[in-house]
Length: 148
Image (tube, rainbow, N blue to C red; front, side, top):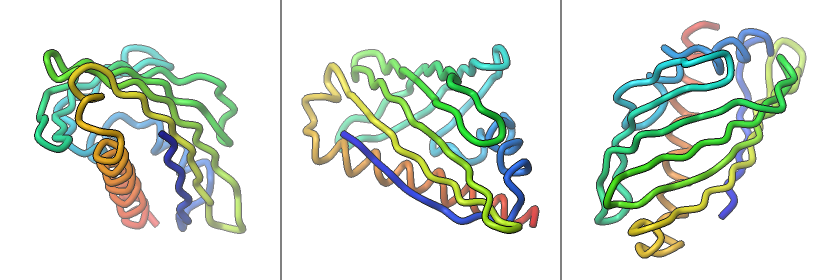
């Protein structure tokens, strides 16, 4: 399933890029994020609690950054393992475009559930993934507005 979105942020692209790579900012913006640790320049480890329909689980998640072109774009690839609940794999292409003194952030994400999560149904998973994406970016945009 694919999820796309676009947001306007009233900050220069470099500031938005820095925030997208700041573990404190990301931890505050990721719904259900318990911990987020930078393991290297391109790898993060996170513990996230998520509820998808009747399934609630704590996911041990690894996120890797690739195709880095600072401060214009990168690709995030992740896999979250939720024990008996199953797993979810996904990736997102994030692009930042300058628009005067502002930044246009766009993303295109793909998600693939497995195990018990896959049995919940693609409509429910798609709706939850869309909601979590919107919640993350709304929090991110609000956090950036505080810095503007």
